[in-house]
Amino acid sequence: MSAAMSTVRVRFAPSPTGRLHVGNVRTALVNWLLARRAGGVFVLRFDDTDTERSRPEYVEAIREDLRWLGLTWDEEAFQSARADRHAEVVERLKAEGRLYACYETPEELEYKRRRQRALGRPPIYDRDGLTLTDEARAKLEAEGRRPHWRLKLEHEDIRWDDLVRGPCHYDAAHLSDPVLVREDGTLLYTLPSVVDDIDMGITHVVRGEDHVVNTAVQIQVCRLLGGEPPAHAHLSLLTDAGGGGLSKRLGSLSVADLRDDGLEPMAINALLARLGTSDDIQPVADMAALADGFDLTHFGRAAPKFDPADLSRLNARLLHDMPYEAARDRLKALRADGGAVFWEAVRGNLERFADVSEWHAVAFGDVVPRARAEDAGFLRAALEALPEEPWDAQTWGAWTGALKAATGRKGKGLFMPLRLALTGLDHGPELAALLPLIGRARAADRLSRAAVAAEAAAR
Ligand code: GLU
Image 1 (cartoon, helix red, strand yellow):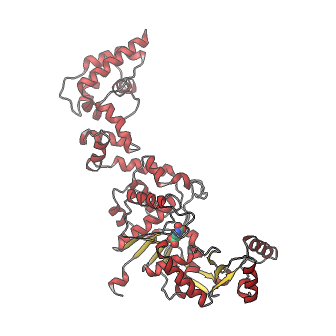
Image 2 (cartoon, protein in one colour):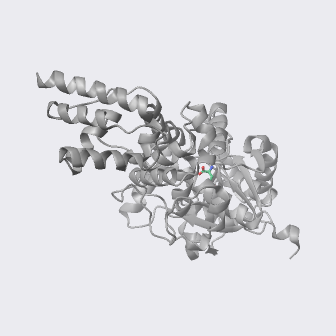
Image 3 (cartoon, protein in one colour):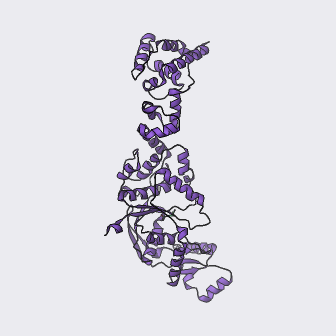
């Protein structure tokens, strides 16, 4: 095989009829990683033949979401721009007798299916359209009916080696002849997709397993058009944490919502690239590292669970390991850049990046000290015992050691009043790390305000 022929070319083919959700992202990501790993080409193709539902604003939103995730594309295409080519193929198939006109209304088709089921037969289209005489057609058209067009399937065994599901086969005799052209002349997705995959030299079609039956049809169509079918991989569909279908919840799992929720794109990528594989799900700092560990053969057939709580946990772990250099520009943008020492002191307490603002205020800004009446005397003693500067990582230990000896307090009784006074919170980063950042002036001010508040409460 020549080098040019072996170049992996994949496409992500969203219909611009809504925003991307985690299910779409997983498909995009797996295609992207496959291309990246193979040094291949990732094509973004907008399947916008449904002119009623496709919207330019969704095109832009999809681009924005992909960019935000880091899923950059090498080529972009619109199916709508290829309408002439699709029409040419339709005419050819009509001329060859492979596309035939049908006139049943949806109600008539439903009635046929019900009758077949009642007779214990599978509800497969009976090919009535194929037997219509010219006269019968003319009569139907005179009644004002317009045809839709079905592909006459070759009744053969259609086989492929699915890269995820293994050997697959469908007996075409068990499938209804698919409608390729609607009554209004617009095309369903089935045919344009094959034509474009052929013309664009797509080598691998990776998509959800809801497309398995389409694949059987599309493989036959591809051969009919003289193409060599691409390799196929069908990913099991995600389920919710309870094992149910995710489709109803997908509305709330859009990339835009996850972004608004403050999640890191790499947390989303790290989870979705490994869900359903035999690999461990670990925080991964960048796409190159994610591509390194990627292997399509690690995907299994079981339906993986998507749990937003897993995403949150992974997000936190990513932040806990994030080096200062990776955080610096974002800290600056949030006006929360307290330097590397600050970042390393607080990152372990972050669930979302923006939480850092709260700790920045604790270290360098204003806090409202909290105090309990019973700690009034202790807080005065703590203020008295505050060491002189310079302060470092040992200051906390020296100070609390002295306080322990002087007051007999220990454990929570010793630390909690200090934490409440110094941070206004009952939880947070190690005080040994925070104290030098807070510095003596702020610490003294907070302790004395806390003491005053405790004394007021004690009266
Ligand atoms: N536009 C189709 C979809 O969004 C693409 C499926 C495919 O990848 O072929 O389901």
